[in-house]
Image (tube, rainbow, N blue to C red; front, side):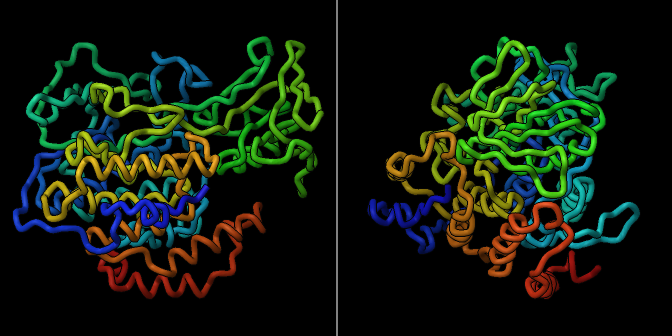
Length: 483
């Protein structure tokens, strides 16, 4: 689903998309900026905004930084995540999760994700989730980000005022006996005015569910991977996992040693697909589910029928901003958030409302970093955006390209391999270093290795020369060279 944004823009002759440096301004301004969320996006946004001279407040519902990387064994009471009034568990991590990218690729550009000393650190190249959280905490400590964070503070509403400023309404949150975040019913609202708002609340809490004919009469259980933690509850059950991305690949293998049978359904394969996974005696791959029966049977498009106990939806998430009121200017339609210029700025509200981390199928931390630098520089006036008209022309041209290419709207923000071109465009706008060649090459080799060694790619690889090149590059950064 990679999109060549820049070739398309050149054909449209849109002046806004010029890889030359954008216009600069001699009048640099300091803005009062609210950042929503203290996960990987919010942390680097806060750092870059302060580096650019802005005053920053970060709002975080939880009691620590890290966002989705803060693991909890707790799950939501609604296993499918459809009840709008359910208590929200922010994290979607499962206990056994290890990164599916090498740590050298994952890290921020100027704060390499190298092995650091300390108890309970994970030195593996594809570490477990706790090591990623510790890395983010290291980052926050190194750059003094935590002092900008208001922990246990729930953002209730963000709305635009008549003078173009933003009102952020918040109140203190607390935790119930299950460590679920709840708002204090007796807490007073705090209303504050900001020049700009940067939305970094992540998009791994509102599940997308597969549409299965007959599922309403099917008697089995259903859940979304958002609420999966450990495999033991699936002992001796027949489980169908829907999906073909990272969580489905991991979870089907995680539960196979416990379950009676595991059947993986994917809409991205041919209808006749039916294969048994080598190395397993109870794991099969199918085409998508065709329909479900009230007798418990689930029929796949390949014609196979399985009597299943549970269907697990590893089917991704929806963009969800319940606190954000833009008076209908920014909307979500079939998981397309828009209109957004370069996946960041809604033209009618730019540059005072922006989003970090909307693209997916990416290496997230470096992309967050480039987006943050761009936003910070634009808010200060050091560089300028195109006109509102030019930004809308760019967005409409992009939408047209998707339509002509028969790419569904829900893939609007799936940029895949184009992420490096996107990152380098952002870097050019900011006048900073772009993506290192070794990082792009390592990402590609890791993807190939994952396909060739689906069971062992995290522990066996052939890109040792790139690892050496990465660590040589890391030595120019004090955070790595002093270890």
